[in-house]
Image 1 (cartoon, one colour):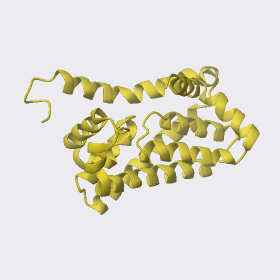
Image 2: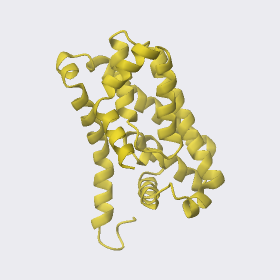
Image 3: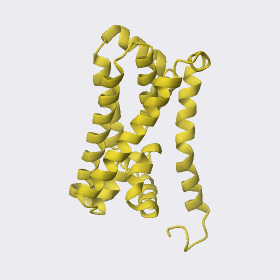
Length: 216
């Protein structure tokens, strides 16, 4: 577990170096790697992958001419859409069983996502895109709650487009500014920290709210 955590930190702090080396060694396979990472984060209950940072970095590399912008964005859109759609179907078909028996799905993550879902309704599908951990479980919770397919897909598409568009647009237009380039790892870490703040605030509110009011 320690080795995994160290590897995760290395990937997070040196994502730009890792992507640059991967592109130089494997070329177009970078698109497959990006697809897998985002698909796993959004679809397979693995919330510790740097989705926001990855989209930002891919767009920055596209602006520098190392990747094709529309292919990179298309891969991010498709993988995110398919991942969250699979997550939703897991919720419909296996939700209650997985919550009761799975050792890999932490109860606290589900509870946090349920609270977010109850607070924001259908818009939680869109808003959760910008919150690590929560975005990996909200479609699952929507499935457990039997949200109608058409309603879920409407919010899902909107969330995918906004998340990818904002992170990708920021990377494309700001990722190659000299001061950003010189501090690229710091910028990527800042993206993770800023995007995590809403989840932390929501957790603290639920943790310290007076009894009887925390779940309203």
